[in-house]
Image 1 (tube, rainbow, N blue to C red):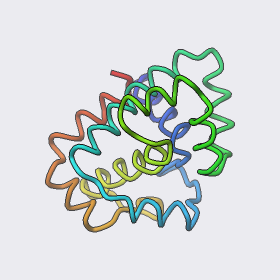
Image 2: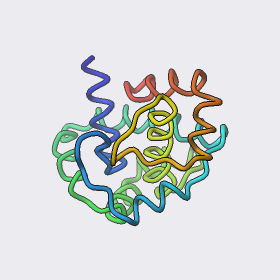
Image 3: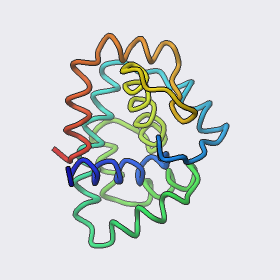
Image 4: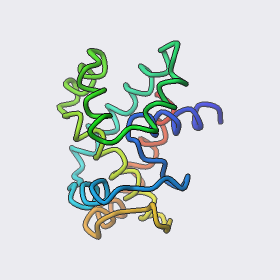
Length: 152
């Protein structure tokens, strides 16, 4: 349970979206999530990067402070933060992702999976196309996403 909570905290750190935690999602974030197309190759890239990023951030001595600061940043600030961190940038490059892909793509995938499983709420944003994708691939993607949240 500790790793799941930690993984969720790190997801908040790296995506800036506290889904289900009452955080407000800006119109810009909402549009980016609705416009982000999910495919199986892209979902696998996002999950792989999330797993590596979780392991990396957990290894930092100041990860709790990073979580706190990141939760207060805009998407643009979070993207800049990822781009200037050599290790984070390396993780993204290895997974053929940009910082924007990661900041937008991880919550897009997470919310599509939540919506595919019946979750609803003001902070659950997913396009019909991404929900259909998540429903069609739920059994393959959900265990991978859970493992990535725990850094495995």
